[in-house]
Image 1 (cartoon, rainbow over the protein chains, first blue to last red):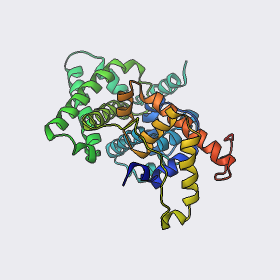
Image 2: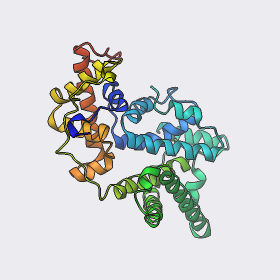
Image 3: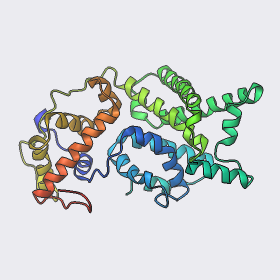
Image 4: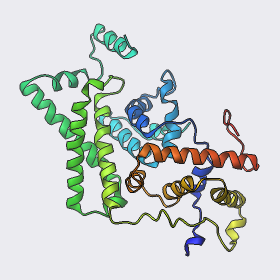
Length: 94
Length: 219
C-alpha cells in the first residue's frame, strides 16, 4: 500500500467525528484520576463531584490517559476485592 | 475550612480515620514505623509499575526483558520521590493507595512508550493525504460518504499543525509522550491541538450536514 492509499481506520474515524467535550488538560486529568476511579468503583460519579464531569470525554480522546486510568482502576478494584467490569464500562461513558 | 477539611474533621469525630490518614501518619513519623511504611509504599509502587507494564504487551515486546525490569524499578523509585514530595498535597478525596499508584502507573507507562519508540521513526513531515485513489466496494457501504468527507476536511479545514498532530496521534498511533518528546513540547499542548482539531472538524462536518451537533455544542 502506498502512502497515498493509506486508509482512515474506523476507530480513527469515530474519534475524529465524536464530540470532544469540554476541555480538560492531561495534567488536570492526572490530578483527578484517583478521585474519578474511586468514585466509579463506589458508583458515585456525577452525584456531587462536578469537577469529574469532563473526565469521560478526556479519556475517550486521550489514549495515553485512558490506558493509565484503566490500569489504576484495575489496581484499585483488585485491592478492594471489587469486580471492575461495570466501572470499566463507565470509564469513558458520558 | 475546605470541603476536605470538613470531611476529615467529621471522620475523626465519628471515630474513623480519614482516607489515608494512617499512611500519612506513618510516613511522617520517625524510626521503625516510618521505615516500615516506606517499605510498604515502595512495594505498592513496584506493583503498580509492574502491572502497568504488563498491560502494554505490544510495547513490552519491543524492549528486552532486562530493560523492562529497569523501567519498572526506575518508575517505582521516581514515583516514591514524587509521592513523598507531594504528601502535603494529598487531600484524602481518594484512597491513599489509589492516589499513590497513579504516580507509578504514569512513570512506567511514559518510560516504556519512550523506550519502545526510541529507535522508531515518527514520519511527521511525510504524513500523506488520507485520500483513497481508487474506490473500492467497501467505500460504497454505509459510512463511506462520511469517511470521504472527513478525509477531505482533514486536508482542507485543519491547519497544517493540527493536521500533522491529529494524523500522528490518531491514524499513526504515535504515543502522545513520544510525539511530545520529538517535537519538544508536552502532553497538554498536543492534546489541546487535537481537541481543537476535533472541534474544528465537527463544526465543519455539521455545517456540511454530515453530523448533528451535540446539545450545547456550537457550530
